[in-house]
Length: 418
Image (cartoon, rainbow, N blue to C red; front, side, top):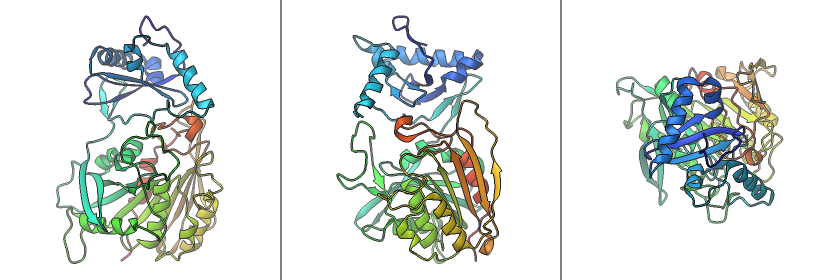
């Protein structure tokens, strides 16, 4: 893979990202391509060469620790470094607490398949907006090709974490791929802008573009109101038609981190419009736990027990409960069984140290459930998602479960009570 002038040990190379013309960014699994050989390896070599030979082409490397390297820029520089030196400098910078050299994983919309062709990794989104409380609220959404306007379809929201956006959440989850397969409308809203100086990542070299958050408190701008108005706009009300033919009994909320914490708030305070929620790496906030839910509601929690951002045992700074207490709180409110059905997922990726155990507490009021996906060894990540920042910062991604499909299988039969 490396140029002849840059002999280097590529044993730590995990992914190669390449684009010869800036139209699509392709992610190729380097380890798999080398192991598979044939058309997949040829496709990677051809794409890599085309990208480097193009004046507008880009090539990025990602190593097994999740560090990103602008290899194309390096190769074109007057004094290019070999990858071993680049990695050594990156590790030294991290050890010194310098994050200025750390790049996030790039959003890719294509992936290299085993037959050497390119598969779709995410779809182009449509943009929508509405004016509310003196602020333009933006959202991005995908309508599946099967939608004909005649048959009501489900509506699924996915809420990003702090410092992210609707587009960032698409890059993380790629749930629009599932929306195309299963026939629901997928919405990725932008949270409200992060106030200046707030948050944990202020270095713009790490996180570029719009940065938002979801307000799960009762103070300040109400994001709950935004989502309620947005549901009415898309799905309609008893007295007005929506922009799409939505099955209003099948509106679901999902979220990552701050977006997961916010989804718990929606489950408690907007359950007249939302049928069920799935919260990933974001447990219940103490301020929400002080409230009384409007009704029993099916809740899914997926968390890693090695999360360095929101610890399994809670985060006092964020005001979140431990994951176990989150599950116990919902079990009590839904009055489900306290004895779960336990399912251990067999590992499908031998080099991935994470393991998945599912706990289902069933038999609640109105047939509600509380479901926990405990993912041993996983960090502050979305299963099957990208290693968006290095492992030393956010922990491991789990490749042992397609969480998107698992969540959908849990949610798709849940309906809003009449």
